[in-house]
Length: 393
Ligand SMILES: Nc1nc2c(ncn2[C@@H]2O[C@H](COP(=O)(O)OP(=O)(O)O)[C@@H](O)[C@H]2O)c(=O)[nH]1
Ligand SMILES: [Mg+2]
Image (tube, rainbow, N blue to C red; front, side):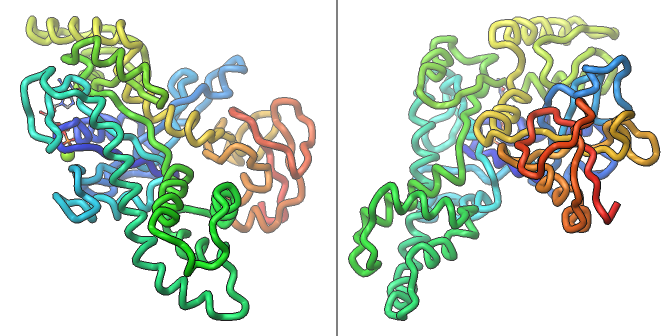
């Protein structure tokens, strides 16, 4: 499953965002436990379900009137403080946990109520812009340290006649999510010495930075917009980086209220409706939240996950079916499954995502929307409904 890690300083709101985003709002048949362990759970990205193009809404449990929720994994990693790569705080544990993530959400306290060490201070007294670069820098330096520690072994290998720098670096960096193609592109672009013995610290640091950028893209959640000075959020939005304003606390309150039947709200909605009896205090809190959501277009929690997957990683959602006219599986369930795949994926990739046997036995595929056969090299598009014909099905 695609994995999103929440990074950032202590007190920024990571755990609140995590709790809100992993609440069992949508029952996912395949994932009965939304929390895998204390800080690893199942959340969802939201997209438009293809059933919106038909007369009737589909039967999937992940679809609410055309709002489709596709499972992803969410990691709530330990708080990060400056110096983490040297082992400060829970530093290295934190960074090691990021190894498995496909994309990072850097949660910052946009209200300026958290200082550089992650301690609560009066709102507005810390500049949240300072919290953005340090997470990147820590990750870069941490990876640079790993490259450094492995360099001797690379140098040793370079004495062998069949040594290949691309291969050696790809092998070293594969655990970090870098493909051989990633490594090749980075090496060509920066023109490093062929002989690893001629590499200096700058070369290695630069390599680490490039690899981190390519394999661990970051979107910023400018959190606590409910108490943040608006000017803070505006300044963050002006940066040349992806920034999504969020209120994790607001999202958590709404999900709980929705579960209790007090409000009508689906994650990612721009607004909500009060439908049950609420106390005066609750009413006041909900009114404040409604105002915040109107200013920023929602709580932003769903939006930041969606941005990570659909904008930064550029994934698409594809829906495999067995019956191309009913868009259903063998038992008549309409659009039962959704798969997230990198842009440029083909029907063959989708077949393998469903099951390796289906992939191995792949014969051809039909686009269920047009009822036409598609070529094996067809680039899947967002919302494609695909019937895979395989010797294995
Ligand atoms: N006002 C406000 N407070 C928040 C928000 N999100 C989290 N908090 C509060 O910030 C504090 C730290 O939150 P927590 O999720 O534990 O942060 P973590 O250390 O990054 O995991 C708690 O008191 C939360 O209630 C938010 O969106 N708005
Ligand atoms: Mg926490």
